[in-house]
Amino acid sequence: MFAIVQTGGKQYNVTEGDVIKVEKLPNAVGEKVNLEVLLVSNGDKTVAGTPTVKGAEVNAEILSHGKGDKIVVFKYKPKKNERKKQGHRQPWTELKILSIKM
Image (cartoon, rainbow, N blue to C red; front, side):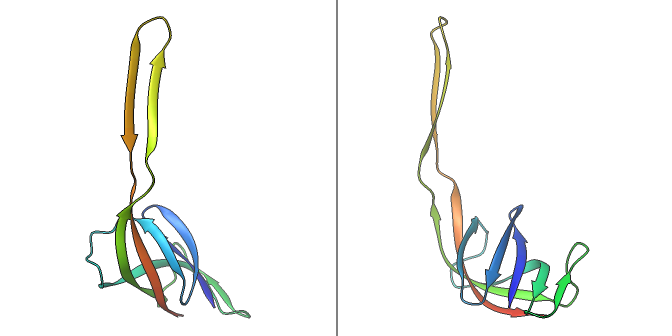
């Protein structure tokens, strides 16, 4: 059984037991969260939502929070002595999918 869930403006294909990294959630480590289910399938039956599937739920547990690798943003204009260097580290939350219910 798998489901397509949405969080943080992105969609993820998940099954029970998967560990995924999503955009940072405000909840604390160890808390349980419910994710929006867009599609759920158990092999022979597939249900697509409009926009979400009624009665379906995906439960997940927050394992940790962190930051991604640093990326460097360098803006440069030739012959103008205009340079700007910035760094960015995207925050993330690691989730473990506990159950998928149709």
